[in-house]
Length: 294
Image (tube, rainbow, N blue to C red; front, top):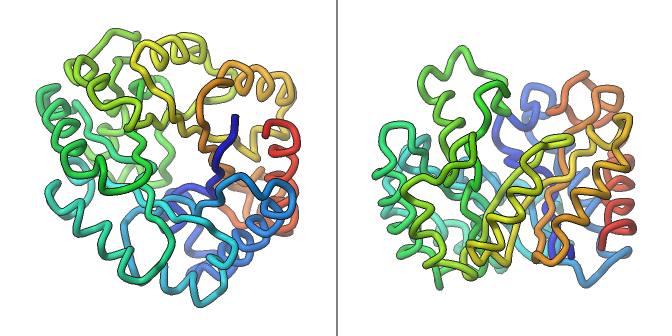
């Protein structure tokens, strides 16, 4: 079921890690290193991946190397959205991967790449096709983000909505399916790239889309799925039942599971982006998830 785990999501993005609290990433590095060592001891067959970085930044990887964060990693991951948020062109994807390959011997995975339909569905369809041309066969793992649009009633995982302008609203148009489950133009061609191309789909606590998502993934021929197990959710009432249900529904896919989000009660600051007061508790959570679901 679980073939790989990633430690956190976009740790060099201030929407996902509190950089004011940990500006040099020393706490993140110590936490990721401890968790990777614990996972290696518990389940050595599972591939250990540094959480996908965004922006793609070779100096960030070098910093983490210096702190020993990559010592027990088998791969590292990058995220890119050049048609929506990044300040580089879509055709630069091979160069961005090469920048990271030049400073590490670890394989480079692309665990989130996507294009919004915010302006036009035709742009998303073009972006999917060109991304496939650039990355399939170039990197060992690609996960398209995402299957579903983010529901308008929810909030995107960002701490800077007021400062983002229209960029914030692009978060809600990244799916191949609209919020109501109806297909967009790009969905028609996605099956041309499976099973080589996987999907990244996050599921919220007790997400009503789970069963329909599994059906769509099967219809599209998706074999590799990336999703998340939230440490913050694990402390909620009913968490065991929800986690069990979700992981049972996803049985049969080759899963890359991201462990992230600090419970408010465990953070140095009461926020899901905070470093935990005790990094061993994050490592314990990772091991507990593998004992239960690997």
